Length: 184
Image 1 (cartoon, rainbow, N blue to C red):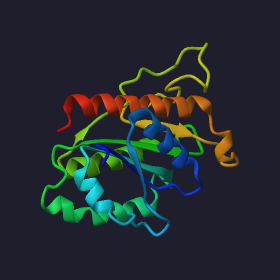
Image 2 (spheres, rainbow, N blue to C red):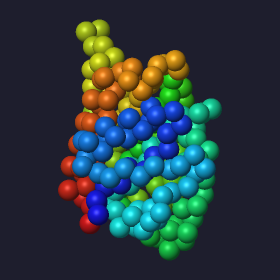
Image 3 (cartoon, helix red, strand yellow):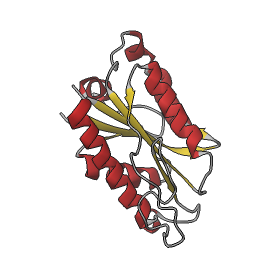
């Protein structure tokens, strides 16, 4: 079983592609929250066995999707017994605009992790913020607290910004390094 689980909800496939890139960089296992907000069979056991849980969801109306929130509410059972205490946590989100209140979603993930007694891993990346940089550069959106990506509302999954996908892979590598260094 993987030490790293990338737990995500994706409404239209864009967040799934980001999750896949994080998994590619980290060597982690993907776990999708379904359209009804449920985990797959054995999902809770897989999360219990993980050393690191990476939370991912699209940002809708200033926060994560309701499907992710349903999962978060259901996580009160492991919370009650401190099952995730000292596991590593990280987070990522995607929305249509460059800002789109993505930080609110990352803050939601961070707060959830802190309620569980988890240890947060940020992006560890400097932003690409000089005039010469483009959207295809690593961390062009400047996420520190976690991974943020942007996909225009009329773009297909195949049209996602290559720099965002490369940033997701780099974020996955950061998570793998932190897991190797700090996780039980």
